[in-house]
Image (cartoon, rainbow, N blue to C red):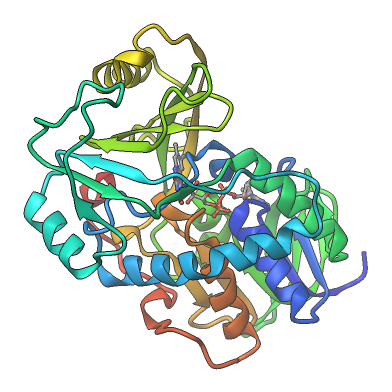
Length: 372
Ligand SMILES: Cc1cc2nc3c(=O)[nH]c(=O)nc-3n(C[C@H](O)[C@H](O)[C@H](O)COP(=O)(O)OP(=O)(O)OC[C@H]3O[C@@H](n4cnc5c(N)ncnc54)[C@H](O)[C@@H]3O)c2cc1C
């Protein structure tokens, strides 16, 4: 296969968004994936475009999310020109009920009056929570997207942009020059591939596939399980976040009940305990869901990183190796901005935000810090 300007390793949302941004900048791009692409964390997620909650994270996370949310509407409308698939992007609003830190919630609402407000949870809503709920916060601008459909849109766009996508072609080894400061080729399951620049966007697998090139990064799989309920359309009008779990209603009545945060390696299995926990949460939060049939239950592996801060930048020693990974709980929300930052870095363009927090490598954090 002929050499390209860019080889992106991993075809989840961050690999595909990176590939598209780089192709749009005029570079020739190839994307490889060890599987069909777009079937891992990016497929499994709930598609909420917000931090959960927005007041609970360091500035490096909320700044990137804010930057990305500003890009989302235009990004999506450009993508939709090349695909017949509707990704169901919908600003449906989100209720946050009884947050762990109501003072921080109130302070955030005071600082962002258009984005959130303390409010009485309407007694008319079909939920166990009501006007007597001690603290409820309404975030009218929070949007959602339907992950599998968004990935289908991205694949259509990649094809339209002339990006060479090779499925079932996982990276197995790196070749460097004798000084170790330049990648000269990668060995995949099918071929030896060369490029000017290499971008690792392999989500939870990024650190493992980099091996000794991982250079201090700390990205590990954190499993999340989701149960899917079937209800009549309109049963639940908004996203609800309460006590660490959430309900996400899709337009056709399906309701996602999520999620767990489990540190169990690369095990993508589902468990009966998690299913019971999620269904109990749904029934308690919304009586209308008590008898809704659970039609699917799945798990995905988030690319867990310290403090939820992704790494988007160049390797400290290898000049043509880049990383766009470690987006942990917010990789869908952060995708447009992360692709932009990566492209600015590769093209050495002036960034539109402070990109220093996303330098490679990130420092290791205590393991338990990942489960918040
Ligand atoms: C249950 C759950 C709920 C979530 N909810 C939300 C949410 O509401 N909002 C939000 O913003 N985010 C959410 N997330 C997080 C979000 O899904 C992730 O941060 C994001 O999908 C990461 O995307 P990615 O492209 O980096 O990784 P992935 O989507 O995991 O893609 C990585 C790709 O790399 C490929 N790969 C692996 N090894 C190799 C190899 N050796 N060679 C080539 N390719 C390889 C994989 O096959 C895969 O296709 C959720 C995640 C989960 C699991």
